[in-house]
Amino acid sequence: MVFEHKRWDLLMSNLRPGLSDPPSQAADHERIVGIARNQRMILLVLLAYLVAAWLASAAASPGADTGAQFAFGLVALCTVIASLVFAVRMANALRPGTGVLYAVLLLVPLVNFITLLVLNGRATRELKAAGLNVGFLGVTSSELDAWTSRRLPQGRVIRP
Image (cartoon, rainbow, N blue to C red; front, side, top):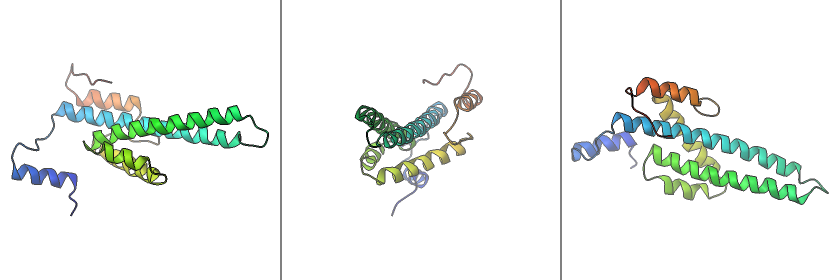
């Protein structure tokens, strides 16, 4: 039987007090900021991948320059690697220790797209629960800065 994360924490805290202590407010803020930044980067990288794939297919016309095809293909490969890195970072911020599982799933064709959708949905739920507005490309930097300044005590800085 699979437990939800909150139920598991409740169960573990009842069995062994102190084992699953809630994170400090500053640590929770850093986690939310990390989720927001990684989600935005994943979405921007995926948008760049779609543009690079479209340009590569447009350059694949008969008589087209193979150098352009190679360049667009290389850009697409770099965006895939970047999305893998940001997805693993976001998965670890959402639930520590799951980054390796997501990395393996992201290497499997078609499963990687479904995995990114699931990961993005979890991140969106977490960010909305924290009171952030999540748009098409995630949380904007200005929204994140405003949320951070409202939530953190004066003088506390979140590392970029």
